[in-house]
Length: 400
Ligand SMILES: [Zn+2]
Image 1 (cartoon, rainbow, N blue to C red):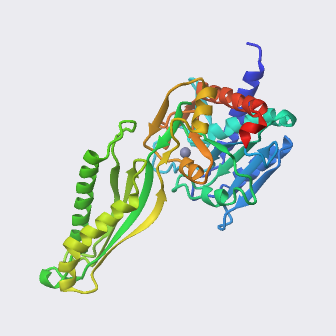
Image 2 (cartoon, rainbow, N blue to C red; image 1 turned 30 degrees about the horizontal axis):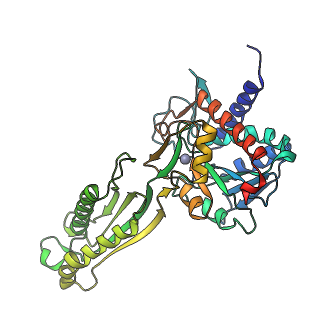
Image 3 (cartoon, protein in one colour; image 1 turned 120 degrees about the vertical axis):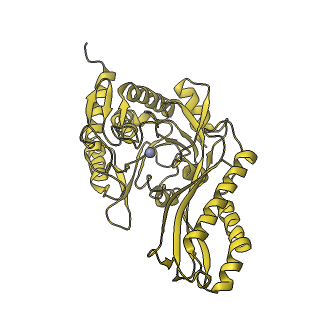
């Protein structure tokens, strides 16, 4: 088959994806080499990018604008980090893209270097039309998304100051190129129980922290059971907020009543629900039902919950500007809500109308033998071409 411009574009996206995947950007590792490679690639095409280094010196966000920086515009947002591969049964080298049966395998192909590769492949095309753009297109790449969406926050804080604030944001997380305008929040906590150690033959002198933690975990189960009934939104699967206890530590020896126990837990909340209310409810239970008896044995007993991270739920509404535009450009009329979290929460909260649409299925994200269907990349490139057309034809007045 003769090469058409579209196959050339797809090939460019595949080549870029191969390059991006080869950088091991598991969140704890540096993403700076990848970000610097992107800066170089964009510079080759006449696009100037800004790196925003993190304090740790090994991570950085990246921001670039094609068009007039000060005219609102649309941000194409992706994260550069990926989840770990250790302990997963990969059949191929996760950091080398392998093409097989219409799929590209490799860590991050789906979540979400595939989208980033499509954006970068399209960037020279948009740059070639820069003089005609009525509204700018921004490339917005973050680090540390997979560890609580923390990396993007310092970049968003500079929006409207040292960086322009995109009026609209497309977050290209894997949605099979469907339009997602709501997702659950993801909040993470650690609860620490301080009991009182004693010889296990003298239980009356001690307060077993692990047993107390068990009571608290059971209470979280009761809270979840209640929320399941009282808060339900059929757009989500599951339709209720969920609570996960994901780790627990404590104990010294068989014959010692354990003085310390801590456990990690998290809530996936529906829009309109504040996860800190659930932490407060757990604390109220602790103070009412557990601490008085604990402190009668030892006044130093304590139960304390700290917030590790809060990702608010995201809901941009059926008729938000970003949702309407994404539906129009994707030629769809249905929106979806998803149970996983994205940076969309932070962009929307900062005042950019935001929508989530990207190539690949969330089913493959974070999995061994992660892949993206090549047809998904094609759909994404077609969508981005329409974004470019929109940026060229949108009247400036619509960008006020
Ligand atoms: Zn992701």
